[in-house]
Every structure is written in C-alpha cells, then in structure tokens.
Length: 230
Image 1 (cartoon, one colour):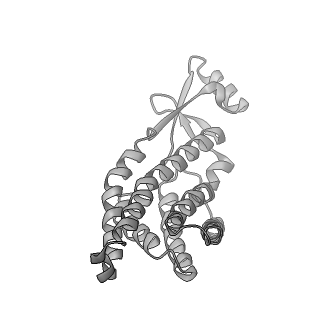
Image 2 (cartoon, rainbow, N blue to C red):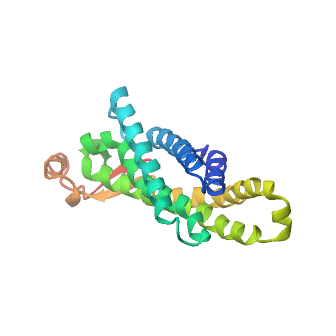
Image 3 (cartoon, rainbow, N blue to C red):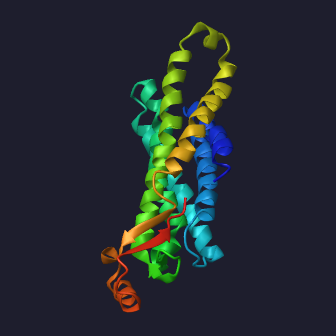
C-alpha cells in the first residue's frame, strides 16, 4: 500500500494519456490490474492459505475482466464527445475494482476471516464479515480513484486547447502524471481511512453457527471485530 502513490501516479497518468488506441488501453489496463492484484493479495485479511493454482486463476480472471471492461466501455464511447472518452479509464477502473478485489480475496469468501472480541481473542471465522470487509475496501478504492481520474482529465482537456500545449504536445504525459500524483497524495490516506482498519460487526448479523458458538463462549458479547484489509 505504501507504493500506491508512486506506482499509481505513473500507471493512472499513462492510462489517462494513452486512452485513444486499443493496444495502449489493453497494455495500461493490464499493468494497472496486475499491480492492483499484487496490492489486493498483499493487503488481504485473514490467514487462510491460498494455492498457486487458485492465485493464478484469480489473477487471470481479474486482469481479463478488467481489460474486457475497459475495451467494452471504449467501444461504447467511440461516437461520444472526446471529453467523455477521457473518463473511460476511470469507469473501467471502478468496474474492475469490483472484479479484482473479490477475486484476489476469494479465499476469504470461501472460508471466512477471523473475528475477535475487543481484547483480540479469536472467536471463529466469518464469511459475512469477509463480505462486509471486501465491500468496504471496494468502496475505498473507487473513492480513491475519483480525484485522480476525474480532476486531471478536466484540467488537461482545457490545457490541450491552449497554444502553448499545442506547440509542446510532449508535455501532456508528464503533466498528467504530476496532476494524478498530486491528487493521490491526498486521496490515498483519506480513502484508506473511510472505514476503520479494525472493523466491527454485530453478532446478530453473523452466521447462525458462529453466533451460537460465540453465545456459548460468552453470552455478553454483542459486537465482534475483524481486520478488513486495505
């Protein structure tokens, strides 16, 4: 997660700059989702083991789904104003986050993540908590992308009409990367903090078996805690 700003400012800047041609859309979406897959896997919750086969399947599914989404959106906006086309990378990234994060963390959705009491004592594993945690991470990541992928296109669309930019088209990419980096410096910590790292869920919302198990251990527990990941 500490690599989010330097890596994403480069990748996102290039996605926003080279959005017109299909080969560059495919390449930069693949690079972006490959990086996201590593981040999502590294910042997952729980300690359930995942095999290399499952990891490969998740990676291929996540990156393929993301690239297909980007190409589909690009074809839909082909006949729309150029400014609309600039927002295709954001729409693709938002949709891809809904695919990439659950796929790279699918093991949590299968076996659950550890839930604890307020003192950190493990009480069991919950799939319901995993779903809630993954949903919160998806929302955080989409919100994280909004400033970096919505503000620079508007600024660049205005700047590229100016004479000094027409005379210096090579300035487009570094300017875009710089603008994205500036937005990410603020958006990354703010959006990581949208939901607490140690999230909570009411016992009544857990699976019946786990609920019964917790009440058997300690009937006074009403709220349990879990690490949602980042």
